[in-house]
Length: 427
Image 1 (spheres, rainbow, N blue to C red):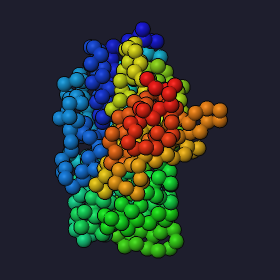
Image 2 (cartoon, rainbow, N blue to C red):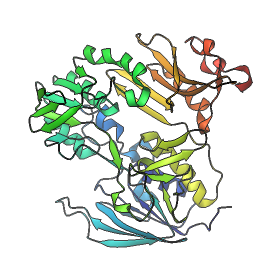
Image 3 (cartoon, rainbow, N blue to C red):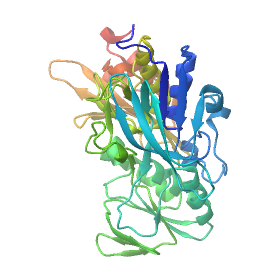
Image 4 (tube, rainbow, N blue to C red):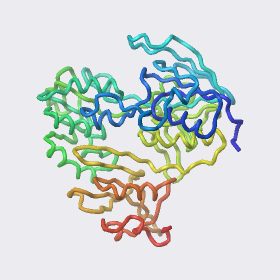
């Protein structure tokens, strides 16, 4: 049975993947009450990863309804696009939200309104960020961002990308292949250093040179001005286009004072989307959250797979269903002609065990922890063109599991990962 009465009405704020999947899960579990969805953008839900991964190959959004992930117009009773939430009030068994039309110049929206429901699900996502002093930089997070960037990146143009994370790497390789003169500047010592660590990230450095991209690590940016990027050391790089691939921040500023927020602006939730310190009428899911998971600690929600999978647990909690196991954190990327995945979370004390030669064409980096008086435990894995390890990693690390490894077997790329488990952890 649910901890609280099953709601008769649900208000979902956000018409992206997390919002759509929340509505689809409600209907799939038999919810027949009223569902209202409010979304900021004026277009139906679309897939964000292709915006960077297929920047030039796909000039129209990839609609989530075409991928079989649900059609909002069929699933919800009311869909209000082109509106943003500006205030929320909530009690034990009710919530109401004030919204206003987004100024788009297209006449979308009909002005201010207030929506009330038994439960509100915050799936408000995130927005790209860059220092406010930077002038002339563009970001890539929405479909209209991709349209703008695609129009700017013509052969021969000088592109400076600030940040060698997932999006920076994806765009820089594609732009170089289009004939752009591309420079990537990264404050960290290696690409993806924040995600996979410096030691693993350094194995990605040669990929940039192979693609004709000038990569400069340990190179902070001092300022961005129209037509140029000034580095911390004083060098000025000329640029026709500057892409700030410097991360995102949850779109939660309007919630200050209504629900607790982390210093980074995220909504703290448990695995069922219950918001720490908020009434049970408020749930949150997807990019706007920091989720606490047993065995993992705090997991930021800012990735596609979280938006896809977390709504199942949120809806199960609302309707009294059995909670599904929490999937392992999972990120995928396509960059410089290679397919990469990161499964799980590597801690600061993790060491790396390589399956295959990291200077070769296909390999996996396993992140393991050596615990005193215990066996070696697997905590995460990063694959480069080695898809055979992705499924096993996701299964082994589900629900915050930390399986024991036989390191010698795990380091042999010919040994399937499941057979590299220490004997007592084998199924």
